[in-house]
Image (cartoon, rainbow, N blue to C red; front, side):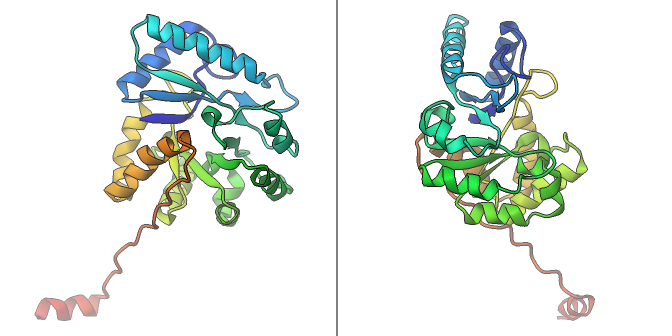
Length: 263
């Protein structure tokens, strides 16, 4: 499996503070069946979470060398989870920010309360510059929980939606769980990710736990698309495969069931 959203790098954001914690997360990733993880530290303009691309790339290389020394097969790739900003397209074009594994896909953090009024212009600028927007955990945005229409607009604009494994497990509350499952049923989700921050509470194991829930919502082919195929396609810079909405069988009326029983 491939995880496209992880805060596994040490001492760079709200992920692990030390290298030993990073290695603990790496072991948990291997036990959960992951073989590639894109390290996506936060990059939020105007805050202390604004690492330079060179810093992230150097740290990824350093961790990979330690993983080899420790006999682990897990490999990290560089990326970022970037906050919304009108300057994103220019910064990405100047390589002042990192995309997912060096592809055209950029992981954009969805705000937890509401989208800024100019979010559509930001998306337009990014797509015009040749980037593909992957919205991280939109199910956790309060505005989108109450009004999912902007997510439909995101899809119309060619964006892709990534939900967290923990969301469908109810780890972020009932409203988030309901929103995530509704998105899956509508066929709006392109991939899932751990958004892992540690090896204890926000652990890679949620991918294994979430798979059972996912299989209750989607058919096996769709599960393969969002859990396996599309993360691979991101690394291959290929278009992501959409998933068809879940069609629930219509309930028969009581009278219809009665006559059917008599037949």
